[in-house]
Length: 493
Image 1 (cartoon, rainbow, N blue to C red):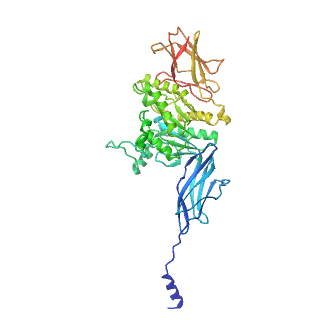
Image 2: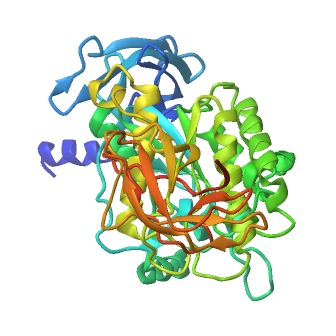
Image 3: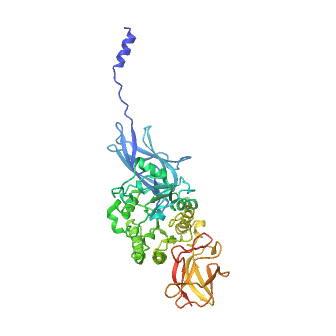
């Protein structure tokens, strides 16, 4: 054997020493697609924590960099964050400005390995809660397309880019949302069963995504949505008294998800009331709703939390019409008692089935909610500050043979497609009396409707707009804000 071969053979038997890479990872504080609620100054302070591995890493510095598509964000190019102690680290990344999507890079000083969190946003978080019209049951046809500035903390507790449908109850993290199986027990869909459900789904469009995108378009502030709704649910099922049940109750689930998403939100959107339109629940709906709003604000630690809601709209059914109108009137009456909040109407919108607003009009409804939030929360922006709440009834007065109905909060002028429809006059017993033969906008006052009547007005007559469960109502203002259902309103004679 030659000397060369002897040396080669010897080398084969020497084991190679393993290379121990030095690296850090983020284990808490930020994940891909996450949205962080900005503070009053327009910044987010992000508390990050993680692990470290490798030899002799304790005492070394963890660095962080925040980048946009065009490069590092000014002031955030590899800045020191925290020292590694016992293979762990934590630190607060301060004053990250509103915007994104951002890429968050983390590394150990002097090491080549970089851990990355992608597509994070700093902006505003909004809770979506209520029953089916907030959950979204619009046809999944021509839905609102996704945007990289609107993300969602989905019901499975994952941050994702928001896309229709926002609510997928069957795969939710909390059992309260799971459907019953053949044995009557709640079952979470997973694997092939979930994939088949998603592939076959035909409905699920909602108002949350149109709301968010419209608000982002006007303000430039990214949005994170936190869907919490569940179809067919009543105020009793949303009772704050069930908060301690956690994920076994609707309120407990919402509260848990609020905390899981960071424990700080900009506001809440609510659409519920259809399930309370019955003889037992309707008379106490208004008080329960006010108690709910108060509890949410207390449990969220924000006494002035912006709270916007939708007055229930139409239902193709002849039953419980009186109770249906009672819930609508309670929602209208509650509005002045909810500071930093407001209501929008939906009675004029088209449906995709017997009770659920259609996909295209859900987009309009989302814009109506965005109008309210835009005006109240971004009044310094010209496109927001000029907005008004939309038509709200003030009074009805008989002037000879004309009932003048005055509205406040009108943007521009009142108008209708075709002849104005939706008003009815009722006698003292509550029965409708056919007296109105023409409805027009007062040429001298664009926020007043003139109802021309024939015959004599009954004693103690009242006025309704949107009487019954399936009225045809078409009164709007220049910003497409609709007049709400109201009545009975006394007619002053």
